[in-house]
Image (cartoon, rainbow, N blue to C red; front, top):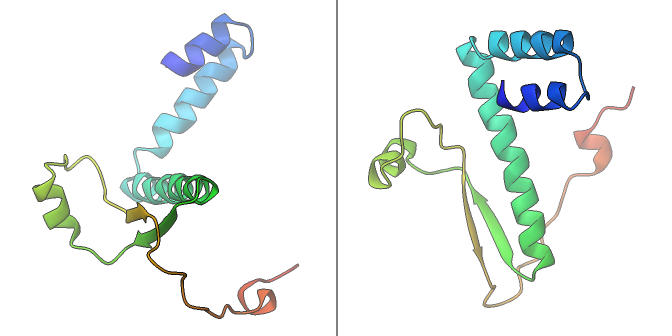
Length: 112
């Protein structure tokens, strides 16, 4: 409401569009699966941007998905409202990373 009310008051959207958007968003988040999927998607996009920004500043990063999420929440007193998605280590490398191979684009993508 707070975001869209401001847009409507500034004339960027109509009150009708504001109500439609609020209804769609609030309705979507009634689904536990949608809310969980959205949390993972949003966290992944934020993590990607953080990792890119860190690299641009000369830092190395590593996304870590293999951790005990329940223990992490307990240790850091994180509310059950939040879903831990990944940890990201950020720092300076002690030595250059070893060479790694990647699958070709044609093996991981489908072009229609």
